[in-house]
Length: 248
Ligand code: 9D3
Image (cartoon, rainbow, N blue to C red; front, side, top):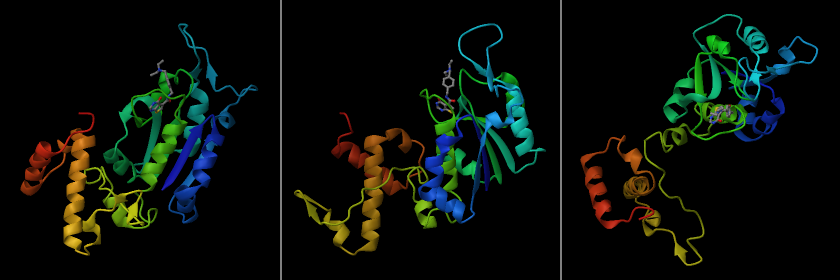
């Protein structure tokens, strides 16, 4: 997959792209990520990327011309496998379903906004607007990194075991079960006995039940969307009677 990022703060991307999984995925040539400084697409002597809003008002608006030139260069003509994404508070909220959908494109072009927004005519060249949640950030750079991180780990070969992608919470619709490692006892807290039993099927059943308990306690909204077996439904009514929900 090819990812082009257009930003007025290219250096913000250095850390995330040179550390950890993102750098290894690039070394393995699974993704090719390039960050482009919007200022390099300006043609005036002051390299202006923003200007005052017509009609008055406070703040600055990003000019259309540098963005147009950047898009023209990075995507000379429209093709199916490409997607121009504008990171914006007005966008659709990113979730795992959208991440999965985006991972099927060959080429993503991410446009990071700043100031009070961009000239609305830029929307004519944008395929979709994406937000990462209902809170206010200073720009689209961190959201672009969040998007790249989440999309990348869906690509084959990025995360070691394919199974760990499939098992993700949100993938099966439930939260993760609790994990334990050595020591068997720490500060008086013991690891649950079942995990030493060596009984694989029973461990799997316990984990599924723990996922159900955690989801019911911490994210009951997720339980409404997930498909459960009759036994699991019975188990849920059982924990409703015997467990306390968080904050109650
Ligand atoms: C909604 C606030 N706008 C009212 C004048 C101004 C504004 C605030 C912050 C416009 C842009 C921004 C910068 N944020 C993003 O570019 C952004 C973002 C976000 O703030 N939250 C969650 N997802 C995203 S994606 C891009």
